[in-house]
Length: 300
Image 1 (cartoon, rainbow, N blue to C red):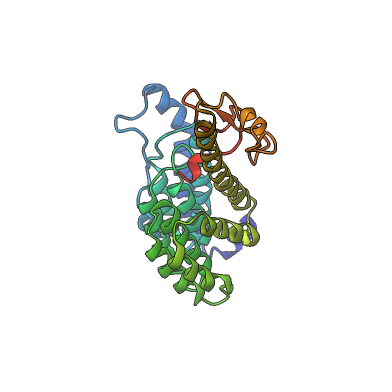
Image 2 (cartoon, rainbow, N blue to C red; image 1 turned 60 degrees about the horizontal axis):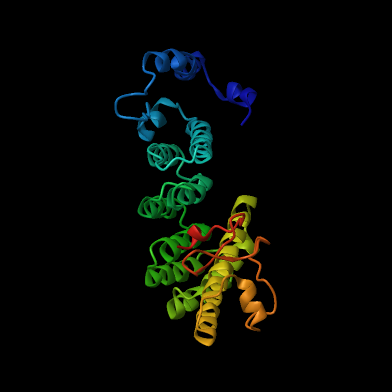
């Protein structure tokens, strides 16, 4: 809603006054923040602080414009997460509380549940490493938006990858497949996960479906990174099997993967999904190259 539309919607001066007072207070806090920071250069005694921690209180103060205020808080969530991730932070103290305020203000803000769950569940430093908090957020989102099948999809993924709870993942995928507009692959996914949870092939199927149906570039990019990590993990297992075979055949460890090529165990120097050659560490174990862009920690 534009500022002009908001102004037309206000029925008389009193709401204008309280709305201006609220945003005036927020603006004043921004203006005074440098002075406060200068007085406390090490930050507040308890670390990061959320000055408005109650979404229900802000909802009462919003005078009916809680949707607009929710958008403002959602913007703050994204900025906070981005700033912490760029800094390589290991903790995200305000992420959960900010998401709580945001979704209390607007329970139908689906993006806050979906992306907020990703922010919470990802392992540090990519995220907060709090899959249980992500599950709680998505469960609240499902209660508020029972018809949105993508929330069930996201919940199933967290059970699958972060908690390795394949039974719960299968149950959630099946329930999500019964939501309006849910694609047919959700039902087959439930059956696959129930039968072969934890199998790399199943994980590849999951991320392939995410890539095919992603409605956001960042989710699509994350799917590619996970698919690369799954492929690299499989490659490394096979390379280590070949290194063992080489040692048994020759009676000595391979000095490089080139030795495997010379012995006919490999056709050529193996390359990881990011285009960087694999290598061998000092212990004789196959590893990613120093310049590899593959993120194995995504699946470990």
